[in-house]
Amino acid sequence: MITLYNFGPFQGLADPSPFCLKIDCYMRAAGIEFETKSGANYIGKSPKHKLPYIEDDGKAIGDSSFIIEHCKEKYGDILDKDLNAEQKAIARAFIKMLDENLYWCIVHSRWIGAGWPTVKEEFFGKMPLPLRMIIPAIAQKGVRKSLYQHGIGRHSEEDILDIASKDIKALSDYLGTKDYFLINKPTTLDVCAFAFLAEMIVPEMKCDLNEVAKSFDNLVAFVNRMKTQFYSD
Ligand SMILES: N[C@@H](CCC(=O)N[C@@H](CS)C(=O)NCC(=O)O)C(=O)O
Image (cartoon, rainbow, N blue to C red; front, side, top):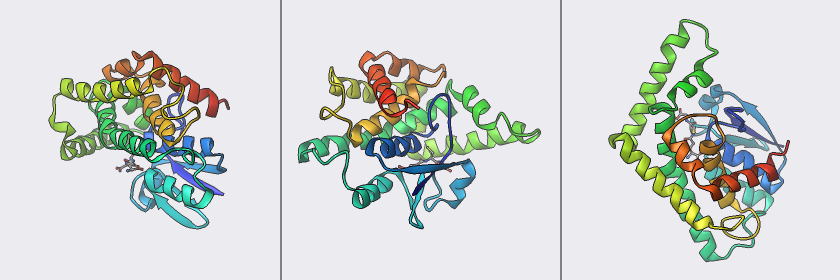
């Protein structure tokens, strides 16, 4: 059986990481049996030194895109087999927008913006003193550096919110009144969109980014639809 290494439950979701949530949801949607092992300590054991990664038949695979590719090769393209080339191209563009652009806006709102008190408490609140006083600031400094190196961290908070809002609006406009993004059943794009949207819509975290996401009724309904379909447990 596949083992998914992730961070573990967070504020009503299977994981605080949209990449880990993406794989959790992909396995459920594709009907692939899996178990989870959770903890930030697995980052050091991961082939790419990030989570998620999986182990399947003794082989470790890191990165959500490579994990999905592996599952498609080994278990069949259960979710996307009915898509044509144009739909696959649209999916690719949206998934990369989520992974490479919106992701960093979410990280900014959680680690630098108004989400920080919640993240600090959730991730570090159970640490013993004096670590609880020291580690959060060190971790936040590391994330600030990553955001700057990526480029998003060089913009003002207002501009980052604007960048994210345009991605979220694009998702809302494309979904429109449909139940799913591409066809009448969930595909990998729905799984990916769910993972990122749920991270902004489900947690009780007060920040402008989450308020923007929650303001799109069709996206909130989409997240609830996916939650009902795959997380009724
Ligand atoms: N491209 C990777 C991104 C994974 C990623 O950025 N994971 C973050 C959590 S959301 C992580 O493990 N960060 C820990 C670190 O950078 O030390 C994927 O698609 O899986």
